[in-house]
Image (cartoon, rainbow, N blue to C red; front, side, top):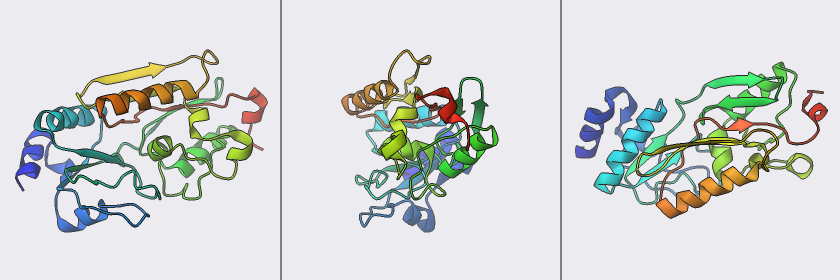
Amino acid sequence: MELALELRKLLGDEIIADDPEVLAAHSGDKWFAARQPEVVVFAKSTNDVSKLLQFASREKIPVTARGGGFGYVGGCVPAQGGIALSLMRMNRIKEIGFADAVAIVEPGVFTAELKAAVRAQKLFYPPDPASMKDCTIGGNVATNAGGPRCLKYGVTRNYVIGLEVVLANSDVRARHYLLPSLPPAKPLKQCRRSSRRDSSHLHWRSPIISHWKRRDAMLAK
């Protein structure tokens, strides 16, 4: 395919796929809607995402970001075809700080892995979506996932105090807030507004997760 060839020249062979099995696997989520993309890009870095969106914006090719594909809202369905941008290979937990109860992670980290990692540090990350073994932090941010514990502890946005995003024009924007200067929902809402305004696809590389309640509530039980 011509698009796949162009992307291989731009990003390299190893992160581009256009074989039928991969395209079919990235055409929908757990909902009933589906549409097959022309090509799938498995980004491994912020630079990959930035270069891809610069190309797609210039060529006016739709891009749909996706994580684990375990949602039921159709958010990762490439409804306009084009490029499916998988963030599953950006799956590092970069830092967990006990002193400030903050974790820095990439969007492809499975939610259950983050919960286990912070518990090993005697901390507690409350959001517990039913698909936490299969869903990712990036997808949780995109859908503001919660789970049964949200009644007591809140949903994903209550634990995001910083985001690094790549806008549709390839600009990389980072916004971080020191505890407890602003409520955690504000940076997420601001980024989502700019996403709609610029028709951009947010790339959640490093959400910073923290508990805004009492410090002792973070201690694992």
